[in-house]
Length: 247
Image (cartoon, rainbow, N blue to C red; front, side, top):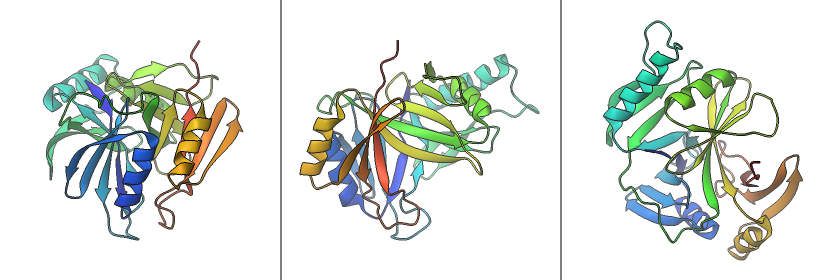
């Protein structure tokens, strides 16, 4: 299995809980400073952070899998079979973290992310069925990022033009995007909505979140005031894009 589940560090946990609830997500884990919210497609984990720290307002790219060791084996086998491993290095490595055994995936651009064992398998049936969690990988090496996501079993999704962007879906929920960028590779967070954004905007506004709708080249995007506003690591808004029909 493969499910999108980034981790967002914040000193404003309560504000984020209110925002995610207004989005239509449902909390399925609550363990001290660790809170997991399910959408109909993908999850988001909130982790407490000290206000103004380097982590506050930062999102870490991440996924969930069923069997960590088997996931690592398959990922390394996929890399071997397409002949892209350099110097014999394996992209997937089993490591022990504070929360237990996990798998670290390392990419050619120096970016790495964790594949953790899913604590529960089923998505919450009460979540808004139109919402999906989106994890973004910004990189100066989009080709290497694309190969890495193919190795982990992400499924390519058509994009509207032939640039260096790439879209993927995960078998068990969520969207992964590769976007070209200068400088060090980094992660980002967003959402997709399979339906009209106006009712969602109204729902968020009624919950006290300032939201504005913009028309962009390939569809509409809703920009919502970031609950982390004021943190040096946080963008001004959180975006929710309207899912584009694919052929």
